[in-house]
Length: 185
Image 1: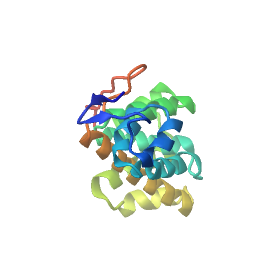
Image 2: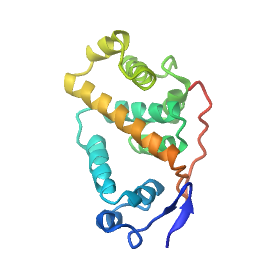
Image 3: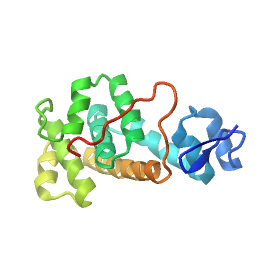
Image 4: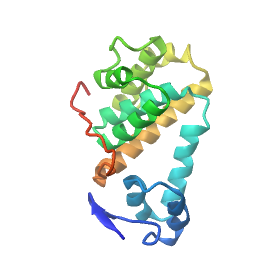
């Protein structure tokens, strides 16, 4: 059965193009996947790269989620924020830390490295190229590999946010969280 949410029908494994069927059968029925399935082979490529960033990088998972959620906040992408706040909670991030991501880099709860990640993320999202004032302090704390992983993660989730918002992908049904993105973004 295909439902409509947003600008396109949500597909399931049976209604997806052949290139997306196999992976659709293995994925949770999230609206992002059910929307992207229209792209056929785009979906497995997207999932493979996204999974690499989520599970196979050296970057600390809390720093990764701070950056991803911040990208979602700055992009005003409630689906992205809700999905990754759930992931953040699953890896032990407190509600106070998650709320601080909405406030901005100067929130008191951040440690020094988290604050630098917030500033760097804001800079990359807003200016494309991180300035020396955000790059150098963070590069003194993270390895070059971690800096590259962080930058690619920020870019990937900018892409994800733009996909979600362009196709008006709605929050997944049960357990969906209403996310306020109006604070200091």
